[in-house]
Length: 336
Ligand code: NAD
Ligand code: LMR
Image (cartoon, rainbow, N blue to C red; front, side, top):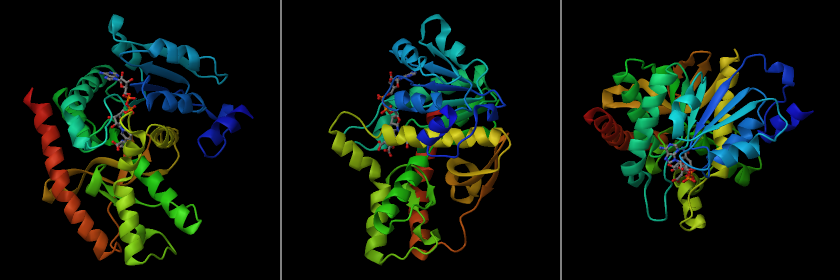
């Protein structure tokens, strides 16, 4: 009953508590923030999480005390930088989710966050590389198109890089595209979204949704709305932040997918990962359909040949941008 309620919070299949056979320790870095709090709540409600480790530079004790009263079986521990708290938080983790960093204000691009968030992600990745090098690292902090290359370079430098285990979380783009199509058609379907996670690098593949018929005008408007859905929220929040609740939902879904794969399920998700699909164009990270397994990414699937000419053109434009933002991240991480 409890597990069913918890699973329904995630909108996914119910599992009995006894189905959580494998222990899974999940850390949230930035746990007291706008995303961190609701994400931690959803993870506390997920029966596959047996231990939840919360880290933030401020306010973690309160969030931890609050969540620890929820009557699911997972243990919750909270950490701040005092007493080497980051390393204590990461010790023995299977999954580390990173929403630490500053969000956008109206008028900013995600790349404008680089100045502050690049260093935050670099330092957190360094601690992960030293403390839990085999964990799956799920990066939410923007600009994802650069923070994933940064974390990857940190792991490389530390000699523990496994490209199968570092993910940029782009699930919110898929969630948005699915919702926007639902508003139009009344059908709740998965919509593939590939590329990256910023403006024109976000590419919804509406051609791949079975039975969906859109006029060119509808396709253009929906594509724009998915690409700039984040801006809609930033504008509506009027200077107080960006998407937090929908992101927590998306982050909880992606973490659940990783845990299901760890426990032996065959799981497919879209994610921004290292791959060779566009390496010839100087792009080494690209969000695509990935098959997940116990060791992280099991298979990277290329875009279907049947994508439309319109979508091929969007991919070409995205690659130019992705090449620049990847380079910026790599240069930052390798220059220190
Ligand atoms: P927020 O400011 O509400 O929370 C961020 C939290 O990070 C704060 O609690 C802060 O104390 C903490 N923090 C800062 N530096 C830290 C450090 N060194 N170690 C640990 N914690 C630290 O911001 P938010 O709304 O939760 O957004 C967080 C990030 O997620 C932003 O960069 C935002 O752009 C990004 N984001 C990404 C997506 C996506 O789809 N990938 C969606 C929404 C937001
Ligand atoms: C989003 O897509 O909502 C996030 O990347 C946050 C933002 O800055 O738009």
